[in-house]
Length: 147
Image (cartoon, rainbow, N blue to C red; front, side, top):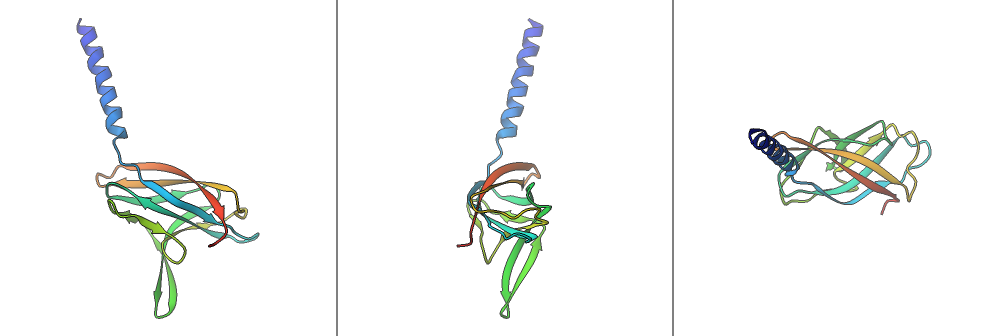
């Protein structure tokens, strides 16, 4: 009987731990796309709208189709467009964050081949919650021409 009680507690603990591990809020990704690029072009851009039921921060992005990916902001200052790299991108609870041409975006560097319309590009996005837990999410973005 003692062994049975121990096994029951062990299985219950494992189930509870896995349930708690899955309890994170998943970030919803919509309107995701990658801008088609030309042969010889070494940089590209990707866009997506991020929504979350809890405060999270986008801390890292990668794709096998680029040497590196950076989060960038674009602003107009005195008639000059300025682009800045961002270490992280906050996604406040219940407030969609839109990455779109002319504003926030993902900048893709060291492209070995151009992005062709109709292709799918897979990305891994890493989000950090208020407790510091990192969650990876994956999305395939279609390649499109600019609107």
